[in-house]
Amino acid sequence: MTAITTAAPAAAETSRNLTRTLLIGLLLLAAALPFLVGKSGFISNFTFLQLSLMIVYAIAVLGLNLLTGFNGQISLGHGAFFAVGAYTAAILIEHCGVNYWLTLPAAALICFVVGYLFGLPALRLEGHYLALATFGLAIAVPQMLKYKHLEPLTNGVMGINLLKPDAPFGLPLSGDQWMYLVVLVVAVAMFWMARNLLNSRPGRAMVAIRDHTLAAGTMGIDTSRYKATVFGISALYVGVAGALHAIIFEFVSPDSFRFELSIAILVGAVVGGVASLPGAVIGGIFVQFIEKYADAMTKKLTQAIHLPLELQPWTLYGITLIVLIYVMPGGIAGGLAALWARLRRPKSG
Amino acid sequence: MAPLLEISGLRAYYGATEALHGLSFSIAQGGITTLLGANGAGKTTTLRAISGLVRREGSIVFDGRPIDKMATEDITRLGVAHVPEGRGTFVGLSVEENLKIASYGRRDKSGVRRDLDLVFTYFPRLKERIAQQAGTLSGGEQQMLAISRALMLGPRLMLLDEPSFGLAPLIVQEIFQIMRRINEEAGVSMLLVEQNAALALNLAENAYVLETGNVVMAGPSAELKNDEGIRKSYLGY
Image (cartoon, rainbow over the protein chains, first blue to last red):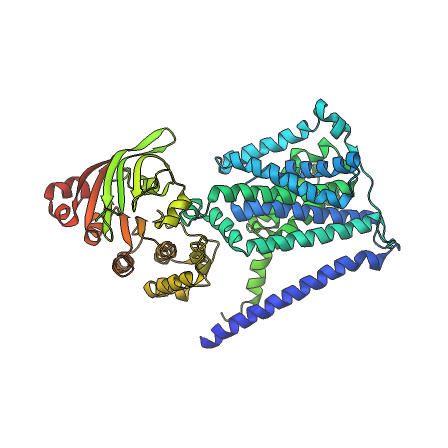
């Protein structure tokens, strides 16, 4: 018994150190990637754009995760904050000539305020009702961007075209490679901040509110202020993701941010693993991957197994979703953690 | 001596529905008082009204200060600790984190440390489970955690909402004995809501019987316990 109790923390420590070393190594490799590849074309610019989009969606999924996974407030409308962030960046660059990286804090600030203000009335709503109210946001915001009176600013349904910034300091990188680096650095910073937040007292208060709001109140936590603030922080994350999306995609339009985007972010959060930081990364990959490849894979699969009936696009997506949720109710991150725990457990025990 | 808590004309509402119709009662300094009554009599609502968890009207004076307009977190800071119905465990946090949540608003680090040690003298079992995720504790342990969390607020009055609910008789006995110790040793006054009237009357000195949002009976526990009529109509044994 004593042997176990003394060995367990040491083992946990080693495992933590190993994870950290692995993570840092992986991130360094990811950062070195564009320099290693250079202009050889071994990894295309299009692939770098895809990788950037994955990371952008990971930030968005993380934002929703802070709200839903760690604070227990559901949102079917985070695509709206994504749109607000994207348009903030696009308008600032197009009309004010602001440097692209300055648009990130601007989008963060605006989305925090919008999210906080939406979070205040949302305090009165819970569960299904909050889901519906936020869904309304997802429906309304793209339409609002089309308003005639906003047209000088938003350019209406046509949207705004942007130009991808070039790599600075004469770095031997393409625009896509450079923006991939920018996105990576921003993502690492935002995940790091989220981790620190969650490990702090406010982070524990967030989880306490999720687990039992009434009891959290009786513990002296101002639950209303917390919930509205978390709504703001969550919107901030998604807004920064939106701004990055606008810059790397070089285009914003109301129809880029339809309500499907809100659903995609929520699906990413659940499939990746609710209340899990690695889950947010997996969720981001899932969002981007599914959007691009679900159709192609459905067609390939139909041919491969000579299905007599024609599978409609998104069929595979739907089936994947059902199977995943059934097999891994804790998301992919939760499923992997459970698998890892099972593998590590000694067979005798 | 002035009462610790004095309530008069207390009304409480769920939406448009009035659940309490002008309750009045008071709690002495240092004692244990119990609220008895059938399901739906308004016991839980009374505790929630004191803590500001439901909309309420009327006068609630705690230790000479009116608290009927205050927010829950401010009432908590004054020294009123609510142990909610169903324990209110933060299942995703560890036992230690559950306990530390309570000290969120406190600045005195040494006081927090002292209270943590105090909690472990009452509930040594929680110390063994300190790193365990709270959701994996047994029902009895979760009730111990709920009381401990309330203790971590350094309270003068504890509001206990059915601490015996769903627990085995032996565990209930253990918890009630510790509640008495907390009352006597730490000087924490208690307002106890219970379905189990026999149990509550043994612990408390004074009792109020509620019926559909009104006080219908009040007196020392010993008197209520021995009154045949009261026993049959309100206490069900």
